[in-house]
Length: 329
Ligand code: NAD
Image (cartoon, rainbow, N blue to C red):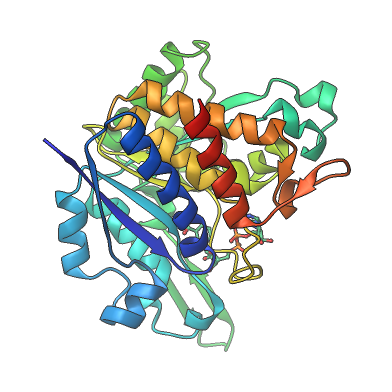
């Protein structure tokens, strides 16, 4: 039976990078006879423009029915002034929580070919291969009450709420332990237990643990400096049955949108994660990773990872090169 993949290109560079990832996905589909069927819809600002909301009920229904989802990125300054409830990121948070995608896997791998693009010296960062397991549907991004108001003395004030229940902690910790078991058996906790009650609860529950929603967001952004560019970081957001939404860790990069210069590799590597985690197609997933490595070996680089002695290419040329490399494997 065929597997349904819903593609949500999103905003900014989203459609540009997703177009390249789709080329790679289609070739992998043919080459490895994966039986995948693709369909397209909108999320974020693009959905607001088309449907008047950042996530339409019909889109959510299609996402529920799909076997996996590929997302570009959402957001942009043109939607900064609209009703906060209708802003693009609300659509993203809603689809994550409605689909129960609580486990966000963010691998940060330094390709040896990109050692010079890392913010650390090559000898310090060589061999970097870490996995950040971020809790994605709880914590401060979802907690209520949240409020922003003007006090009687005229000062503005705002607050958010950072809640975590035992069951939320337990299920993400289990993913962290499972992942650690098939890697180096080392699991590192990131929390702030000296001041945050929610972090203290995480500590009381487990000796070792993974990271909450906000810390995971911040840490994976920082990890991008180690891997050379945020344009190299893929991610998978999984539910309890490994149904997933796959997307690059970066945003919609409005500063470079429409110029054809964005790095599509994080999105292409997200496709590889999709094949591995949602469809157990590890051979096809590895082939995509190999194709990316081959293209880097050829010295092709988008602007964000470009350095002296390499060839600068645009988004489409990078995607085409990965397609050619995959075809030739
Ligand atoms: P960003 O990740 O979009 O961009 C940060 C910097 O990295 C920019 O200089 C950008 O040009 C660069 N960059 C990002 N992706 C790149 C790529 N593939 N190739 C080359 N360079 C790349 O973060 P931001 O500027 O803080 O946010 C921009 C918009 O994206 C905002 O509206 C924000 O809300 C949204 N956002 C969305 C997501 C998501 O959809 N998951 C995540 C983060 C931010």
